[in-house]
Image 1 (cartoon, rainbow, N blue to C red):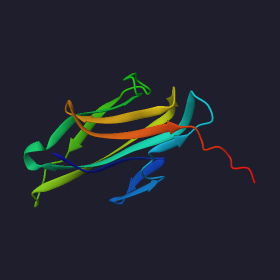
Image 2: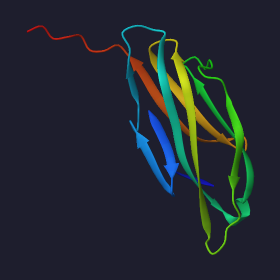
Image 3: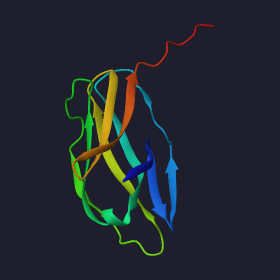
Length: 136
C-alpha cells in the first residue's frame, strides 16, 4: 500500500471519479487568540494498493497538539479496497471531515492517517498569531 497524495483542505468531495477540494494544502492557521476553533478541515488521501491487499481495512484519523494531546475525537471506520480486475494496482480515496477542530494553543498540530494499524500519512498545521498591522 502506498499513499499517492495526502493533504488537509477546507472542503473536499468525490464525484464521478474526480476529487474536488477547496483550500488545498492548509499548513498555517492565523488566530488572534487561543484556543481557537476552525469550522471544518477535511483530510484527503489517495491510497494505491495491490491485489493482495484487497479487502476491508481499519481506518483511523487522529489529531494531536505539540504535546501529543488529542485535539479531535478519533475517527474510525472501514476502508474497502475492492478486488482488482484487469490491473495490477487499485486506488481508494479517503475523505474525512473534521468538524469544529479546536486548537488549544499556538504551535504545531498534526493529523495522522492510520490504516490497518499503520500510520501511512501525517499532515501538519501550525497555528500562529497574525502579523502585526503596518502603520502608514
